[in-house]
Length: 288
Ligand SMILES: O=C(O)CCC(=O)C(=O)O
Image (cartoon, rainbow, N blue to C red; front, side):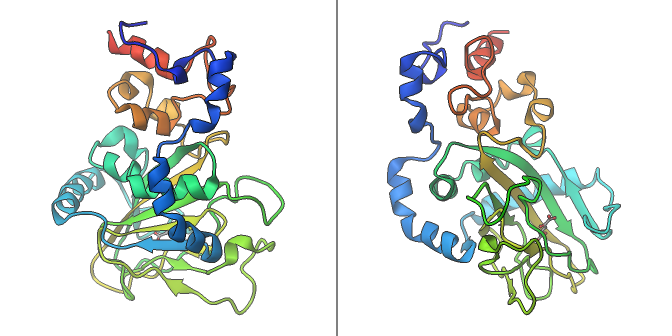
């Protein structure tokens, strides 16, 4: 099991100590959650918020260089919904370390954990590059695969990082404000839409029930975004993180990122193995 001392969180989940700390399983700090109170209120009311310019120019440059390499290996989409003039790279947690600070951005995690008021996990991380001419996507909800009657408690949150400026013309994401609380499975007629206009380095956060769509790219340049979906830790993830990021890869990630992708126990009984947290098993691998 390695020489490192186990933390309380690694305890046998049946133990009273493990059960008593269940509610403390958060990746953000209490102070950060207090600081984002107003932002969370806006997210709950409108279904989305935009945090402007959270990445430095230098960081953006590194991300762009890395994405350029990753996108050299992919072809355009093959479905109407995914976009015939759109390139996507999936399973980004396995492919690059340049995005780790985005996944674990303290303000973002504080907002998401406050909104869901629960232990969270990463569901999917992918890039979406709208090429010139890509028409607007159809409106949809990211949590449609959880078949619950609507409106329901928030289940997931999407964070779209703008790697290029999101503009009027280049396909900025389209949103229908307040649609996250609608009982209807379709956008109601006469709905108002807004475009998520934001400079590169910003992140738009929306409730998984909000109707949204990629916009129409009318320019001659591409529009790159990174979309990271987070969900309650007791739900099935969209990407299979344990196959996408198997233990041999996961053991090299930081502990918070291991936890975020699911190498952690949820609600005390979900995800353990042989009465231990998966983080214990990853530590055993670290010795190899
Ligand atoms: O690219 C965008 O702005 C949104 C993309 C999206 O919602 C999706 O592909 O499901």
